[in-house]
Length: 285
Image: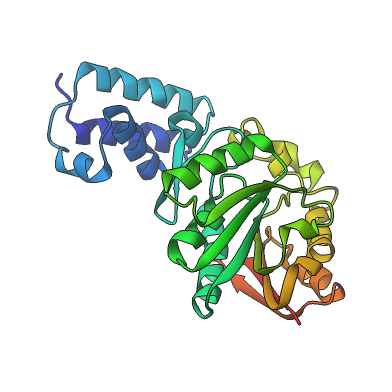
């Protein structure tokens, strides 16, 4: 029986729903547009057009991989963050909507200032720093990560968005004091590893079995990187500069305490759409 793009999308969406996938509409659309080589606009335009046999078979092959647990972002090799398409592979975390709040807070802070130097620490794919660079044309951004393979992905995303003049990569270990060779920054942002080591095995299999543990494991209590960043990167933050950190569910009070004891002031918390205390902002006086 002939199948339209819309029929294919709806059937894949239904199978994703039945298998408990959390964003079935998004993932069904991404599967169909990827295998058909169409943009979202072309998909909606062509919704009533019949698909070819190759597109039909290819879409269900991708669906079967997804239903076995493989994250869709790794299957198709890209994902969006704040509407920005990014190269993604298993060497980096998949950008989450939760993290968009951190980027939005940093962009708002930077837009109230002039030319600024930005450090995106534990950058992974570079999603936060690249979003900042695209929204703050006067900002100069350093993407820092311990993983050379993650930095390779970040460099691809820098080139993809033609940001080589204002965004650069550097290898840096956030668990150790920041090198003075990096210079000083007006703002440091980070979505560090914050899952307690003992909780890793309880994560969803699509995270536990596919995403890099190096980017997940925050030590025994999940707070190791907050301690090291708060003290080790304090000297790299200009006076009056901001440190902005994403944190996990229930971690905000402890993170605030770490920052307070490390000498930061004006400590503020931003909640996400689920009411979770997600982003901590503080100032180096």
